[in-house]
Image (cartoon, rainbow, N blue to C red; front, side, top):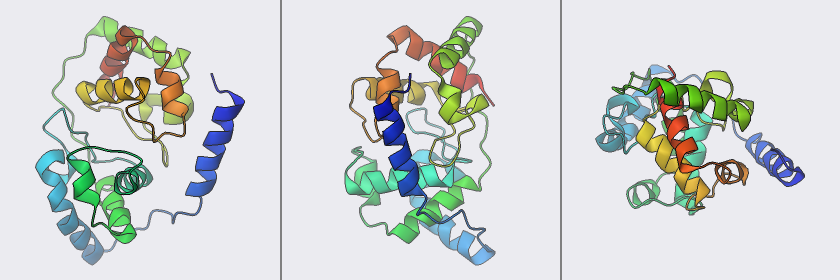
Length: 199
């Protein structure tokens, strides 16, 4: 349920993001330079952002703005992770934009996960009940600063929802912490199956 405070917070985030440049088409030289910068990311996030480790999210095909914002939040301390925080310390704004554009241009590969059909259906119902598609859009394809999570590893989805619920992760203007706070552990598990099952 969107409260006036959440609506105000979301409006503030959108206004701040309006100042960001639109995604630019990178020429071959820019893409090669961005790829070189991204190679440091491949150790955890996999070649071209297709992680083979469910502890690390798939970045391929992610919204460039979302990737940029997360890198910026890690750099500025609004989000913290023992692996990521040191990796972003020396990135410039231009580096972060280039990385966002590079990963957005990559094709995501399907994950090896066999979802439980009953949990997928339960997760779909929970998604509708808490209005996930209002921000993440139908099929969880994401938009702008709202991430694409369709086809993301269930382990990663589960951890992020649990972190939002416990307020270990709070770089969300209050939107995800508010929604996650209403979810049971079983709800989170069902959502993880549903989201991972989406293409």
